[in-house]
Image (cartoon, rainbow, N blue to C red; front, side):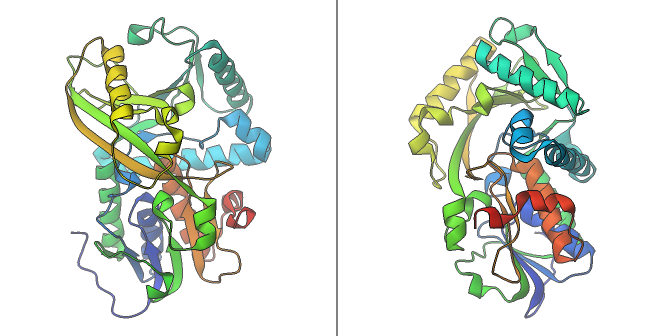
Length: 362
């Protein structure tokens, strides 16, 4: 499906995982002329990269002002600029799988409004494009207490996007082996190995199992609605509720993971009656009716304690690299980190890679 390239024997780089990270890494390496083999247990985009709500957001999992406190102003700004560049790269690679719409982060109560206002002030102070919207209209009026609008953000058709990225990597010369699970790293015949499996990482490297916890996100999609009520991705309650409308006006809605935190801290791809019922009720609240649910799915993403990815060389393991743990923000960070790891393998390590150094936890 993704080219007919087949490398006999040993390759320069083997990548485990054909999601956005693995395909991004493979594209950069193959464009540089390396022999690259990507191993995927199922099909391209079968993991969280193709099973999410389709948000393409700058930044990381933590609000910008929190990241600035955690990393310092210079590194926080560097992280956000990295994701803005990655969004621009995504726009050139994704074709009609991406729409530049902006995104709206909403305050569900006055306390969250204070948090959003602090993030807005920090972003504006550091020169990032951002808008504060104290009053909301349409179906948001009276429900939310202000919002931040992020103009650079956008909407993805995630599976279409990752398959397109995989096709570009294959065209550049990467071999992509679907339905080829890797259970032990010793199976890989390569000079360099990259683990790019995010929440599906467990079992390959014991220290990584302890550092990256799997989490499940559940999503529903409705039949096309009668109008466009939401022109961009929306998210509220610190990201626990999120929704958008597709080009054909379907409502795609996910969240409520915090209502069953122990149940949702799992690597099992399943939908559950409790969260599905909450999603259906929320859909009714948002549109003022009971739209028919046409699709339900879940995806597993990887979470780290500090909400920053692990990307770089595994300490004490020459030739072994990792890029995972995006804490729910892998659509853009996965693209960025896959490319950063590839550049480091090529001997062109970018300074931003130090932000994600795996040695801080591994």
